[in-house]
Length: 172
Image (cartoon, rainbow, N blue to C red):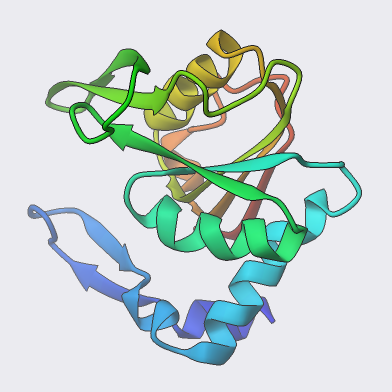
């Protein structure tokens, strides 16, 4: 299965800048069988974890997290860039390669004690996943795991996520 999923991901050299090899998942998303297989693979490690809600990280984490939530039979919560949510929010800022940014969730999105699975497309440096972890903890949720379609091992994104159950479908 992983060879099939890997074959659906397009490599784009020098995007968004020279020296970067971008892993484009839009080709996987447009393939019904590939999307179904990716969804099942993301959900599989957590089917016995009694997940209450899936949190998807903007933007591709929305695309993958929603069907994972459906696969697990639970609801979905978006973690969004600052200024995109219409109700009262909790927020945290974190560093990126060039600057910093803020991510937010509705303050009532996660009930205290709720069992949360965080989903995103790629684990690279881990900064965004750590920020969302912090929001879930701030809302008193219990993180049962973090699931990624791709993990870029050379970037050591697991560092700073110690103690969390991390599952990635494909490693690069």
